[in-house]
Amino acid sequence: MIYVCIPSHNEAATIGLLLWKIRQVFAGFPREYQLLVLDDGSTDATGEILEPYSRVLPLTRLHHAERRGYAASVQALFRKALELTDRPKRDAAILMHADFTHNPQVIPDLVRRIESGADLVVAEGKLEGEPSTQHRMLRRFAPQLLRGAVKVPGVRDVVSGFAILRLVALRNAMRSHGSDFLVTEGWAANAELYWRTGRYARRVESVPSIERHDLRQRPSRLRPPEEAVNLWRARARLRATPIAPPAEPAARDHERQAEAVS
Figure 1 (cartoon, helix red, strand yellow):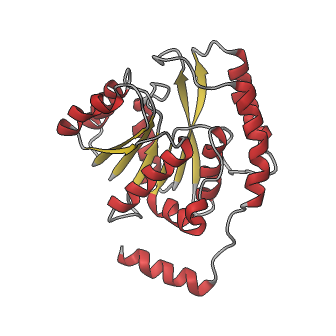
Figure 2 (cartoon, rainbow, N blue to C red):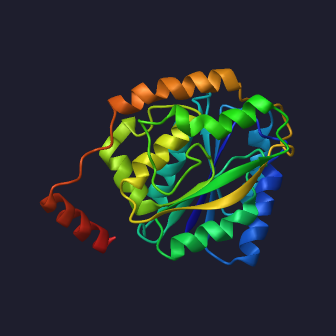
Figure 3 (cartoon, rainbow, N blue to C red):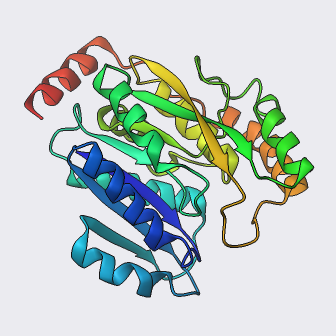
């Protein structure tokens, strides 16, 4: 099963069409899939738009009555995927945005990488249609702002919000950190996600993708100066909550037995 996890806040203009485009991708690339969409305190018609799609698509809707932010939404979506799966070693979760930034046509490439043995695959974005020079420059140099705190071998674009994660690796990472799995917000939360999950991945890969910032139907919420400060401050938080040390041999043996049963 592929769980497509989509955090959403005030995306009424695009969320319905995005779900339909994802359906078309899986129609031509037959795999079992489930759409998980979290409406994070939207004040527009996002909830009303989603309601009829839940009757015609394999869609599970989650909702926050008040906005809790990107990191909380991502964690809630992943917890739902882990709750639903009965094959965490086989199943995977895709994280993507609801504003047309990420192209659903990349999904088959991500899934094939998982099927060939990768546990974490990040879609590294080349920005197109982004008018803000500050935005483009920040995206280019964002990994350097996290240098010394985050390192994901094989991945340059650690702040990309488009990736696929094998659920067993994600589950192990979340178990190790509990409620403090993601302690940062925004782009830093993406880097933190790959950093922590990568610790439990046998193989980490990346694929190229195009991010279309000219298809978004609303103004960008990113404020480059504020995001740069957020990334810089995230370094201290990440250093204060390091990746958990390797499990003891007995604990690893117990975990392998548990995974074999699952």
